[in-house]
Length: 478
Image (cartoon, rainbow, N blue to C red; front, side, top):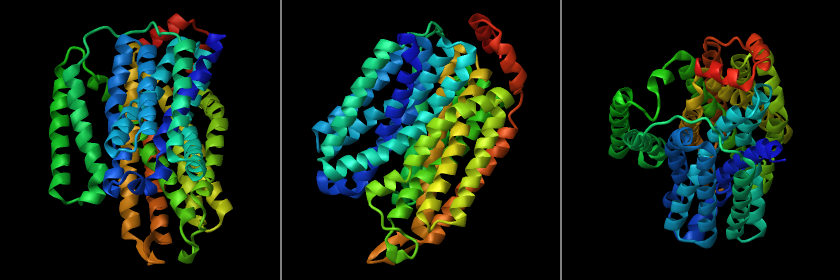
């Protein structure tokens, strides 16, 4: 019974992670009034989660490889739930930001779960399970926005965090009960210096990217953060190359079979996130703009819901394509479909049904791409490094999303006009954002096609005839 629940329980954890990241978004406009803090301070409820998630994902991934993936997974879910409880209990902005930083630990749930699936499932089930796990990011985001909007509109805002606290506690208990501890370990001493160096470098990078629009891209603070990031990460790379048991095996990470999927993850993360950022704003724009539909927060969140359903339905399709043609082809196809989705958005962003169709096509491409990325990583790294390698891959998606957020914000602020006394992005600004995201998606497609050494169709057939042990040996020798 427990074995059969492993996949759905891990998928539930991935959906919870994405829900936790997105539920605060509809609340942001009201938080200055509710907390007595400035809009700039309130924005840290998003920034803190982004920063802690980016820093903790590769760190917890490495810890999972060394000390036990289930143990670290339960810890991450526990921190996520604790953060939600703190948000439910307090209206103090300092406590809320700290709690949201704790919730950032949940970003490690997906790479840890993917590594557990690779260790525990037979080869013939791994592809579909990993595809489903990868899709939970989009499914949770699509569910989180309308859920939060509904609760906020009809109930006290603290109730939203009590709901997520209950869901988090359920996910924690289920993971503790249903998920077995993986026997695959990478022994050695944890690289504390490497973890601190990576944390400092990523904090400088993502803080600069996320705050550049508010502080000014040419300001001393932003330029100092980027210079500090370059210096720290350079020293970190040198330290990692000399370390006996590094946090991230850079020699492995720089191989084309690993480096190119990481680069593609960054580009796909950029391409996917523009759809989420722009769609809700576009349909909520006042009708006086000439293009806006004037929808409520709840209605705008529901516009993304079909995309979440599509991601759930298309994850097994992605696994079948990868089994037949290889994950490299699936990844390239997903990036191409992403670009097609943005072409639909550019062609017609006036009618609600066309907006939903375009957003759903983007969601389809995201499903194909995100489902293929972990499979490529699993084939390219030893069994003892799967959690940390997938953690780096998720980190690259996060960086892509952060850069996309900054780029889209800069475009929309530059292309805005005053409507009913307030600045509102123009339709031209939205179309430029779609064009930018579509172009990046095409670059992701080209990068995916450059990934070497994917003989998937024959390799998959041979893998189905192997025992679990021989499958592990083949991965360790990759």
